Amino acid sequence: AQTVTQSQPEMSVQEAETVTLSCTYDTSENNYYLFWYKQPPSRQMILVIRQEAYKQQNATENRFSVNFQKAAKSFSLKISDSQLGDTAMYFCAFMAMNRDDKIIFGKGTRLHILP
Amino acid sequence: KAGVTQTPRYLIKTRGQQVTLSCSPISGHRSVSWYQQTPGQGLQFLFEYFSETQRNKGNFPGRFSGRQFSNSRSEMNVSTLELGDSALYLCASSLLVGELFFGEGSRLTVL
Image (cartoon, rainbow over all chains, first blue to last red; front, top):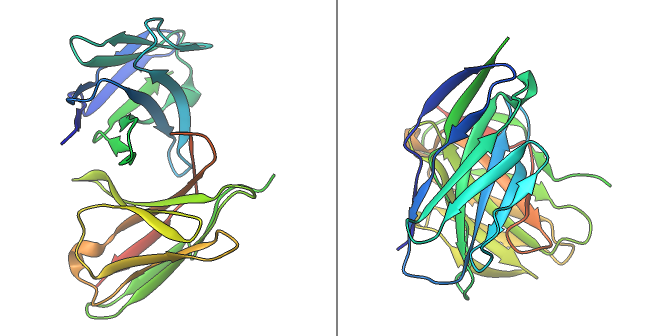
């Protein structure tokens, strides 16, 4: 069974700093997707970034980028020039590219951006 | 384009009662999945429906059930409520693989 582990339950950084959220996963699958989802306080969860395992190039979306290390089964999220609006719960997620394609989420990292 | 709509947003029930939660997906999205979110367990997958058929099911007891209608709207039902069922229940619809669009959730409190 696949598992997703986020080892940092909570983090705080100053506005404009760069922060990295860690995520590791365990799977025997070779083809899969990885995601980072963001859940702002009292607001809907949204997809931040997505990575296909077969792609070696790390995905980027504006200030958000990932460091995907397939061999190490690591998928960290880097937020550059952090903004107050980045304050949220961040969930790392895994989905295998097979028939049983449910998404498995980590327990989340609560990120506080301090003014 | 309207987002995912969940009703009711908040509800309070007592142990032993049952509850039905509703989810209207984004127009055109045929896949609807449900998650239970609690502070201790995080997000746990309940089930997924696609074109009125349950495609996946998580590790929850049979008290948790769901269905999807021909217009893709989905409902989930929890019978014989327990205190531990208190949670935020999230519904998500999707069109592309893994790209979930979440509703604001239904917060259930069981007393």
